[in-house]
Each structure stands twice: as C-alpha cells, then as structure tokens.
Length: 171
Image 1 (tube, one colour):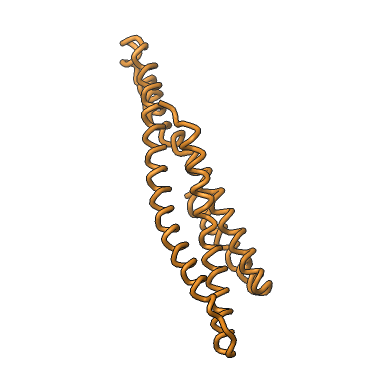
Image 2 (tube, helix red, strand yellow):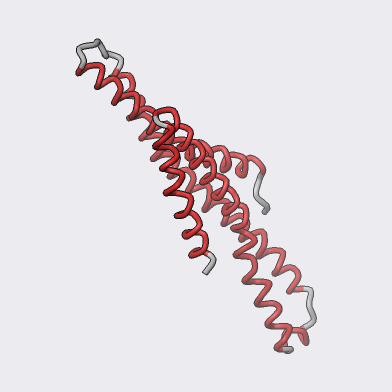
C-alpha cells in the first residue's frame, strides 16, 4: 500500500501554499499600514476594508492549510508504515526458524524494523525543509519591497539563528 502520487503532490502543493502565507500576511499588513497613513493624511482609503477582508481570509486559509498539512502528513506516514511493515513481515515470514535463534540476526531484524521510521519520514522531512526555504526567501523578498535595510538586518539576524537551530537538531 504505497503512497499515491496524488497525495504526495497534494502534500507538496499545500505545504508550499502554507509557506507563502506569512509573506502574504506581511504584504497585506504593510498595505493596510500604508492606507492607514493615507487616511491620517486626509486621503480617501476606502479600499482598506478590502485588504482587511483579504487578511482575514488569508488567516483562515493559513489555519485550514495547517490542519490539512497535519492530516496529509499523518496519512502519508501511516500508509508508508503499513507498506514498509508488509515488506518486512513478508521477508521475515520466508526465513527459516533457525534464523530467529541467532542473536546477531535478531539484531539485524530489529535494525530493519526500526529503520522504517526514518525511511517513512524522509519524504515529509524533505518537503518540510523545502517549505522553510520558500518561506524564508518569500519573507525576505516582501520585507525588501518595503525596506532593503530591514531586509538586510533580517538576513543578518536570521541566518546565524538557522545555523544554531540546525546544529542543535543534529544532536
């Protein structure tokens, strides 16, 4: 029971859309602030309600997409686990009983059973890494639209934090 290509593709698309939501939120918030300044200066900014409604819709979409990512992740993990378990159990059922009495071979079987965890999650982890890269680049681009200086400062403060997080996650 392998994963279908449709669910894998849907997982990637939903993850990428989820990665772009913070950038959309920052952009819409910036537009709303610009319109508030225009209102303060006496200009007509009746379009502000359109941007506020878009921000509200984007917030709802972000919440729903987070839930959908979680459901798809669980679904993919369960399907992968079932598929890998069936392969491992099929191979074990064809082994001679004497094979199970040797301690070294039992250790090999345990390693095979536990390795399914990393195998079944490798797809999800890869997509998560790609999502974080897209989120980071899109946020830097949106910030650069408003202020290249703040964009540079954001890069200077975020990149060292990424290295610290990556080095801690390896431990």
